[in-house]
Each structure stands twice: as structure tokens, then as C-alpha cells.
Image (cartoon, rainbow, N blue to C red):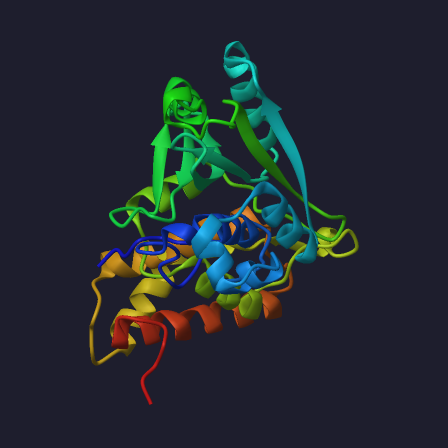
Length: 298
């Protein structure tokens, strides 16, 4: 147990090197609740498969695709190698707002996505679509700065070395995840569910907050944490088949609680609203216990 925790269901890039741009943008889009695979992103960029295979995705292609998804971009660029520390600090400031970024590494030949910054570790969380062993890598300031600055000897003759980053921002409708250290740990250790599945389930169980409803609701993650033991014991004793352990059930609820907190899901304060959410959670947990997954077989 413990699959890779990925923003998308599918493997985005292994074996598809020319798709590193569309794949990395798809990771960034997932932070805003937009789930589009590499092929849909490629189409939004206005590129054919052959064009992508021949030349990859350029900055203008990524910008075009992002705009068509309702997402803004802003360049973070410098031709001065000495500006590296400033670039790193600007990137940190951006990520702390819950917004991702697209980075070019490997001498400007490869796109990756920066999804967050782990304050307690002093590390950037970077999703590399070609990585097969783990979804996200951790980079220190110095490591990332070295990756971002291309080696002039490895570049094309007409290319100029530069720090080249695209900051990804939501439009007025967008609301990013508030990525914290617990979410970063979730990416590191893996989960039984991917982000899209968890979000779809949370959409069914809870609601996103609004200014009008905040006084009548409370954070959903607190409800999950408060009744975790009760939910686990209830599912355990009502199920004839145990395809998961009690620890697996607690880990399952922990992962849902983390995502619910990062996305700001709420539940009504009334006893009826809380009871309804707990009943649905118990059903989902029982399905997972019986099948080892939340997807029931026909």
C-alpha cells in the first residue's frame, strides 16, 4: 500500500520527454482544481503531437495554454547569474501564496513544476514529469539555483543563459490550494488515493466556504480528525471483509483531512449536517475496507 500521491490519475510524463511542458502545466493546473492531462494541455497550447515531438513546448505555448484554462502567467527572468539569490527569494514569495510555477532546468531543455516550499525543511517541492520513482523531489535553495542556471557549453549557439521561470497565478475565479508542510509530506510518502479522487469525494461530502456561510460552518478537517477513531471502529466492526488494516484506515482519513484543510472545505455546524457528513464518511471508509479502494467493482 502507499501509491505515489500525484495531482493526476495517470503517469504524466515517463517515456514522453517532449511532453514535459504540458505535463508540468497539468500539475500546476491541478492546484487550482483544473484536471487536464498532457494531451488536453497540448491541444490548448495549439500544438500537434508532431510539433511537440519536434520542438517541445516553448514559453509562449505554455502561456497560451494557461490562458485558455483561465490561468495567468508572469515571467521571472534574468540573464545575470548573480541574480540567483533574488530569483530564489521571489519564487519562495510566490509559492507561499499557494501558487505554483513552471521551471526550466537541464540547460533550459526540460520543464518541471514547483508546487510549494516546505518552510520547516527549507526545501522546494518540485514535480518532475519524467520521474518514475517519486512524484516530487525536494531541492534546497542552492540546489535549485544550480538547476535553474544553464551551462552555456551545453546550450545552442544562439541561446543566452538565463534564469527562466513562469509564475502561475489564478484569475479572479481561481482559488488555489493552501499547500502546507503536511501536504508536502503527503507528496513524499504517497497515498492510496490521488488528488483528483480525493477532491471529487470531498466535493460530495462537504462544501467550499463562502463569505455568507462562514459563520454557520466549520472546517471539515476538524470533523474528520475529531471522529477518526469512531469512524475506523465503526467501519471495522461492520465489515465482514478486511482488505485494509486499521492503520490503513487512519492513514486514509489523515490524507483526506490534509487535502480538506488545504482546500478549505467546510461542514455545517448543525447536528444534522455533521451527522450526514459522518454517515457518508463511514460508508466511504467501509467501501475502502472491503475492497482496498473506494472504487467498487461491478
